Image 1 (tube, helix red, strand yellow):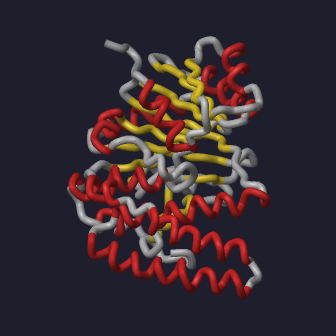
Image 2: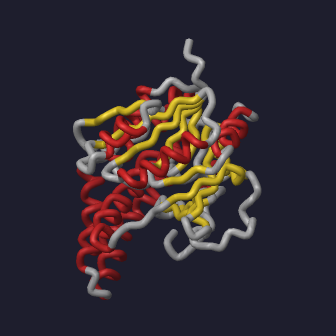
Length: 318
């Protein structure tokens, strides 16, 4: 039997310099009884060669093609040995004790299935302290994003979900809930997985003592691509996870939003590409209805939608 308690799975795609700094911080921190796995998603910048040459203690898994965020992490999870799986972005820097805080929080309560870190930008401002949820469009934003961190989010608490830039998932939860949905490729897979986990009766906890610096950013050139993935995945998440009444209710709302409201608003602002992106999101989901996935989730759920909707907040985007 393996003595490995935790498996740190780091996904990389053409982020060699970020990955080097990430690995240095992880290995410098306390990672006893743990393994560190790098999944390289068919990078072309020499990332895999760098890991092999400079970090011999790290397990390197090379994918022959880019599997996306969900597929790449699933590959690492499938090869991991630990009781606790930590998904960590390659563009992060961890603080000392970050892993122990996650593990201690998870181990303290068997109902806890997922634990997320406090994520900070390099300038010290907040990146994420959990996810804010809008049930109308199955939307999420990072709690506290952009705020100066003066301790206002230093309370450990139950949240609807956490950002998967750094998160712990118990292996028992993965066995029960399943792997990440590889249809997502990029974005919203964290919200979807947290909803699925909550529907099985587990808790999701934000742990402010586990502090991780997250270097993020989407270039203007890639913004439309990011929105295309995010919008289609939000609708897919709604279709999979909501109960029958709320699928009809908010599915109809989404139909009007994606087909009429959002495209017309974009056209009035001369954002023609974004109008197309909204229409694409709708028709992609019509062509890729998650019937099998929905049946499985609904069959296994043990709590109602109120367990999700009680976390919903009303903002301009929800």
